[in-house]
Image (cartoon, rainbow, N blue to C red):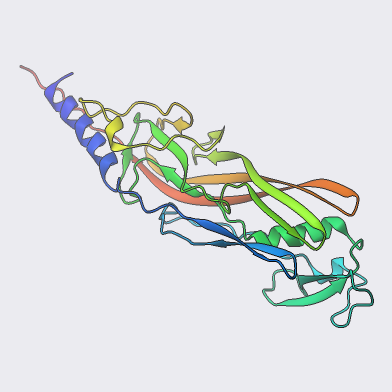
Length: 260
């Protein structure tokens, strides 16, 4: 390897080092009210910054009130009726509360339980860590789920209104913006110690990609959630997807050949 080519490779490796100081991981806490037998997840947050200048899809919303045809706002006819929060109109944030029969719709009650878990998309981890730093054609890009928590990876469990439910992420689909789609688990986090003495970065052992052309690519990570529920003699599985995006710029390393 010529001196100029080696220097260019080292510069590319150093670019991956920028922003390698990770934020504190997010923590989640399960909070339960023993009187009402209702539970929810309180997420402590954490500024992971994995979203870059992309975005995140919203977490699952409460079901529509129209799903509970026999629901009443006040004074339930029987003591075993269940209180749920629902939306009057699709796409509207306003919620109202209804008392519904416990067997009115076990699956709709399961959806209401999912909404209370406040699940969120994964935080994207990829190299380079700093979203303002450009990577280069031919340099392996590592992909992983950053700061996985109960609400972004699972398992997250809740028991409320006669429904027991546990949700977790089964896998993550990565759309790399160049036509490549990968399906991975949590992935392997890249660390600065993984650069060799020549400043080179090897491929990820679990989830990664190498771009063969320069450009500006939108990386989209879709977490595939699976929620298993049971109650009132019924059971089922609900599947839902939550997505995050980040923009990645890919350039080219210019190699200058000199004569000696």
